[in-house]
Length: 474
Image (cartoon, rainbow, N blue to C red):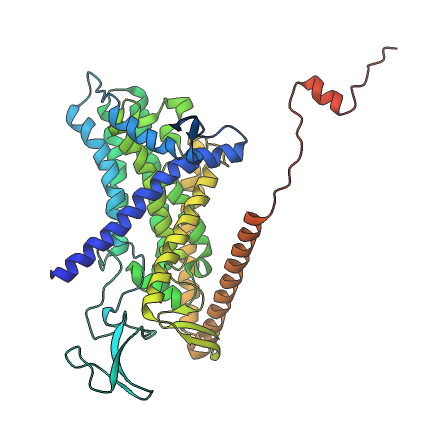
């Protein structure tokens, strides 16, 4: 590995790990504040910094910092009859696979380093240009820096391209399943090694639940792999950018995969392994201090990585409608309405921001679901996985195979029709995204309506409603 490649690798690791850690930390804050807003209760309002008589609360963000300090300073309790080795190993096995997953998730298009910027010599007073020789322009020419556009397909051969993924493996999706399955081991070992019946019950629930929903999660992607024709995550994104997002070509698989991902993260409404009303705290009941913090943080990190996977496979990854590697091309079929080249460096930056923006939206949706739905009963949780989601995923494979083979036999007529339909889906996506942005801006700047609510006893409510009727006895 060259020094340049090593620097690029360090930068990519820093970007992905930094995003994962920071967003997972913010999610711990949003779970408190967002949940309080949705359920009309008091949120994080106790932790503060006292500056004289002024108390700085930072919208409750100090609670997240206080949690971090608490995890590092609390006593590390070890049950007397626990298996010391496995008890200490379990949090590591639950924590590390989440970070290993981000190694194969692409967060942007490949960078052609020779197209980020170029130095050219332009003739004074206008005219043609030429490349500098040994970094020096000839007499009558001045040096200028330009930002060229890339070609739509492929990468420039002038230099070694840089893939914006830490480990561009040819078996990317298989690596995802291999790492995701390791979380089962951490939960199972934690429950068994704690010497606690509630922990053991939580571990059994976690193992059975995660195995059950991993089957569905894997089968839902078979249809997507048939259509994309690859298991490389970056190639899946490029297919969606040139055709249609995965949510249009595999709508049922999208919702099945989304449900399975939430079940894998063991959050409400699928938090049966941790059900505090039944199992105290499930498989990590006996854990304290930073060991508990690793389990706690891994759960939020799973929300981030699962959102990244969903964005990559079904929501176009770093792509936006009609924006390609070379710039903006607004076209429907063979009819090109607008075509504008955009510098390669700006397309790369826009793609990275798009990927992380989509991920944040999905993290918010998962937090919204967490505070909206009640917990399943355990038998119904397993019944949902084996009798609803699993048959639906098998049916999706069957239907996808039939439709895909029929379209391939349709020849050029079917291919041209599919191109038009794909461009229409891009237009629909562009319209929906624009409408959501406008709606969000309007909602942010408008003055909210406030209504007076009666707070008091039932007698107060009755008096405000006009009193009560007296019962007449005949």
